[in-house]
Every structure is written in C-alpha cells, then in structure tokens.
Image 1 (cartoon, helix red, strand yellow):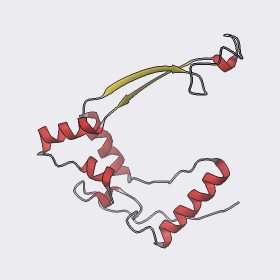
Image 2: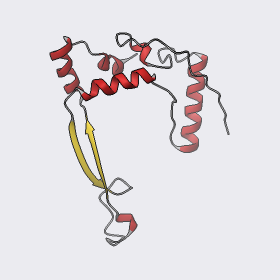
Image 3: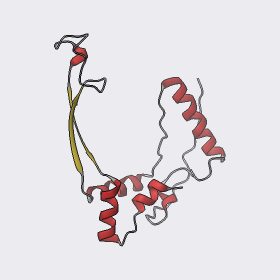
Length: 137
C-alpha cells in the first residue's frame, strides 16, 4: 500500500479574475514536489482501485462560485432509466424479474459550453472565468 501525505497547499485568496486562485494545486507546474505526489498517488489509486480522487482540487470558495454561476445559465434537463450497468437491461440472458434488469431512474442537468458562452456574451461582455477555468493552463 502506498501512503502519501499530500499537504493541502496554502489557502489562497479567491479572485474570479485569476483562475489560479480557484485551484488548490499549481497544475501549471506539474514538476513541483506537491504535484508529483498528487500524480503518484493518483497513479497508484488508479492502478489499485480503477479510480482516483484529487482531494480539494477546487477551493471551497471556487466551488460555491461555480455553482452560483452555473445556476444562472440555461440548463438542458435529462431523465433516463438504466440498470446499474448503465444499460437498458439484458433480457436475453435474464428474465424481467432478475436484479440484473432492475431499472433506476436518473435525473441530471447539463450545461453546454455554448450556453455559458451565450450567457457571458449577454451579461459580461464575453469574459468568462468559467471558460478560462476549463481552458487553464
């Protein structure tokens, strides 16, 4: 088992005009010791568990700011029914009463980039920290 004690970087002052302040890690400097620790832990976790989490990737202030921004943009609602295997069931190999074919309802909303761009064009003169974050670094 690989144990990494990754120190959460110092608290930064949040500034929506400076994308780097949204992030807890300096992802523009992947060679730094801190980023190398993050990368090694992610590599280990992905190989061991098939997934990894980067703790506190965005600052708490950034998370609140992004949520507020996204609430103001047009959403596309989507409702689906799928099995835990993310499909429509396997009725060839299992009967309808099989747990394999148990359907779960899912509801989500999607905010496409074009809606963010249109919103900021109307309200902020085309300047979008959300798009800047997406494209950073």
